[in-house]
Length: 473
Image (tube, rainbow, N blue to C red; front, side, top):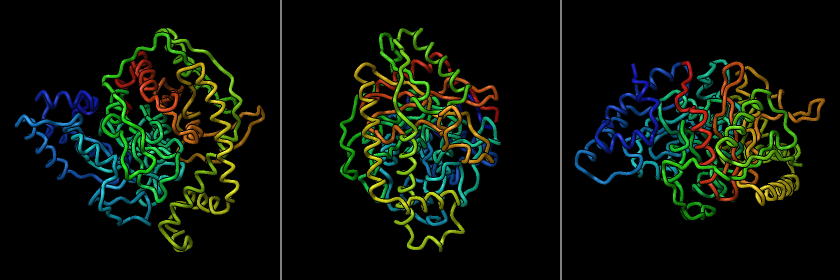
């Protein structure tokens, strides 16, 4: 049996315990591997686990501490990497039979920096096919389940990483977010999920480096751990021509002072249908921030469902591009591909170039609306996922339409903020539904002001104390 108190200790505290010789990296990694063995057969968070290599690296980490060597801020701490992200010498399948046997000869920059910081990769987490299908699992690796209710989905493509963190297998897991795939699983699993400012962490793994919606980001149980991940992975690199933002000084622990901060609150961005439990918990978060001295004002936004619709268009074209870069003939692979992914690819192939460019006009209008909000406020608070986690057998037809009240039913409000990706966005838990499922709040910051969203998130963490809450499994 694993030691659950150790399993649910934050990365920040684990690193301190290791450096002060109060915790052996070997003991920690051994406990991590035991916890994965307990969880993975039930939930399918990991597609690859590396026990021998992880223990070997743990012994080396222990020797470094004994010898008094200089060590990094994540020295000896276990992490997990999403199976979309290239890892040198280790299979990276992207959840697809197309890439089933691909072994990259390089680490993605984000992986390289985490390992340089002393982290120990214990495994790779399941993802939907090419990180594109809006559900967990893939034809190659099967279904991934939510630890709060195993009949529910844990979210979009970083779902495996979310489950690994929520169940105490690792304190931090890497994810990627092109339309909410860090923030949505974080909301469904009761976690912190950060989409940093665009370009803050290099994202060099796509065939095109001109896309501006894709981000690497952490899934964690605490805001401090998300900040720690950002601190060691941020910074320019010429391998990504758009990662030019200078590093910022991130002091962990993050201060939680929000006295006098001006916060705009939009319950629905002006157009979305929001589940009543999500709305109720958001209002609790608003009251909590007011009690801590923030000035919170509800605002009206003139955004429409158009921003969610163009996000979907961009996503379909992105899916088509990824598949086309890997295979020549869709029909040859169709039987082995996720049907939802195929539908997305086929929609993407039908989209005209002018329609794709029109998305930029919609994104520009959205930015001009959000820009005016930031002329008066420091951050914008709104929902992330619009409902608690849906059932695994739920239909995507439950979304993408207007109801009789003119409210648009979407799965989240995360994707629109990828269209204006230079704004950081942080998902934090803020309560539970009547059915016991987590719900979350999304904190949007001004361009490149990642520290402010972390500060607001830390204030809410102090109020709700969610890191101490564990799923029933």
